[in-house]
Image (tube, rainbow, N blue to C red; front, side, top):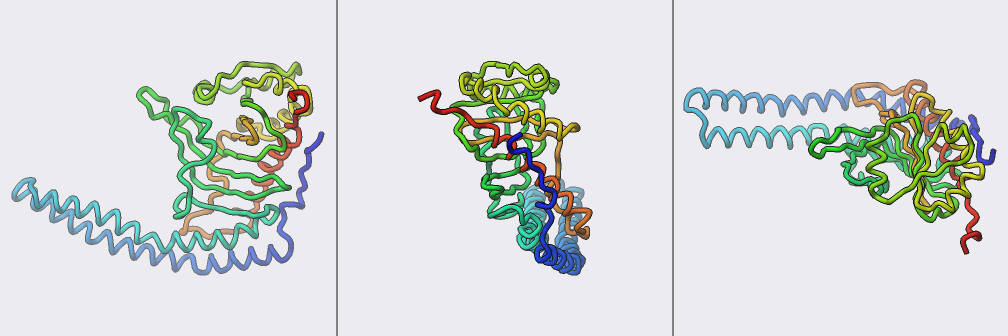
Length: 324
């Protein structure tokens, strides 16, 4: 099948990159304990005055009852807790951010123009493009990877969608969202969901955006596995007559323990992998990092996600002249 390529050697850093990775790990692990101790001492500097303020507040309430001094101490305590705590952890966050900026481009050397941003970074975006296709849900993004793989620009986030309305169902999706650029323009929207997965809330919120109708591929195995909904029936029919359905089966079988959904719209594709959490999140400052335990699984996972996207991209081609 076109695009069905998984080069295991591709994800292995070359000798120079591997040397840079191990040097960065050694420096990080050597400095990590000191940074963690300093953060602990700074937090103690915040906590001790906070305990004193709390004790004074209780004493005043017992002696004189609640009043203006009590409210002032409570506000002071909250301000001390927020600002003091933020300042206490800021150096360790900066240390980890600098470490990620040095380490991860070498780890993911098979990705061009690689960028990684964590939710606590100052330049972390407030939203992602997938938010534009979801209605009635609030979103939370935990980290963001972006770059170009084999000529395909992509952005990957770990995302949580929640229905916080009255009578809402809370979290309706938590997992990986991989946005990638299609090789050809899809003149509408195509939503692909597993048949045996209860996605009534996710489907509802996607479908509210556009009026989509159901269609089938004509392949019994594919139609048994996936449900197709679109507002561009002619183009979707051409798509489902090609290698695209077989690519979907291949991608779906690659994640037997999870659920994969696909959204195509214009020149953008979105793969949603349900149930994947903390895939590209490094351990906290209190833990050492090793290549085999923490970095090699990241390389394997990112390569798998990008291979799936490239497979979809290579088969999601349309005969545009048919519509001219």
